[in-house]
Image 1: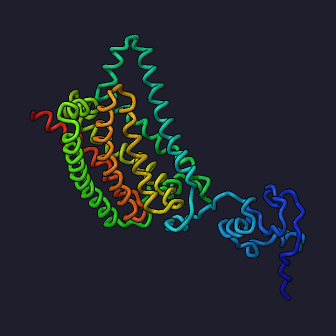
Image 2 (image 1 turned 120 degrees about the vertical axis):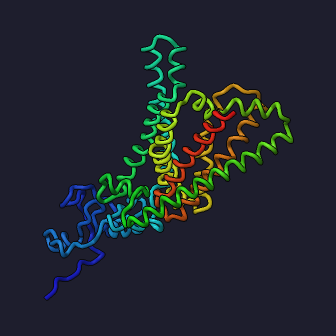
Image 3 (image 1 turned 180 degrees about the horizontal axis):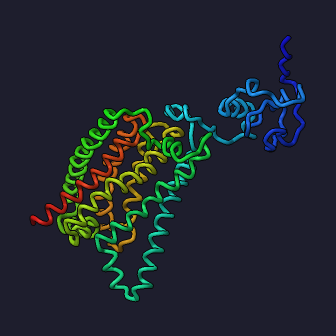
Length: 363
């Protein structure tokens, strides 16, 4: 004779779950503990804990059931299993607020650390001019680039709350930084796609830059364009003091540090969250906009006349926006896997440095 299934009319008047001790909300017909998943009706009816075979509900099933019945009591997100991580494209993740807030937090934290290191250099050198000279050194830029790892750490720490097993492998996988399910041939394919799109990105950005310079030239004239371009050429400052060794190290940093860290944050975390809450088009567009604005913070810190500032902003914004849209579309095409996207970003940055270095040494 089989045991009678507990009725949905059973009232759970416990304050805490008898298995895990989590607080139970005061709501009618609560059946499952949202924390451990135990069937509270079963315990109430049979006065014992269910055997493993009698409590086969996954945390996701329980969360989905209770969230649908009592959304105000269970605003938390679902926790995904290792199997769920293989296909996350149709699954809800972090909110728009979390997507924007954690991205901003990562960027602020990175800059706070950079400023702190800069202050220490000024204090220990006892000379501002010597400190500035060090800051402009390509080797200092190479070392300080490792601060960008903060852009990985912040989202990796945050996404653990959405995982049943929040180990480092699963944290990176939910962000798209994974080769799980990829054969060697498929990984090679992603690398080749990344390199190809880096070349496409170079052509795209140079084309957009040419169009915007022509457009600005026709409106404001050559002198204004010259002043605006000269005030924002950060790459030139790096290249003018670089030698072959520092250039090689910078190229490696671009590929393995900059491309990786920025794509985990902007595409793997920010775009992934926005797409699920705002839709694909708005998610890609807003991510590209934020990516571009963040990379232009330096323009806002340089005192420029209004016209020069406007021209400088336009000349720099649209190339950044173009490459960011390309990266966002590529991320979507590659089903939210970051291998090709990180390669594209890193190789694009590296090619930009190499091209500027060649032009500088030739002319």
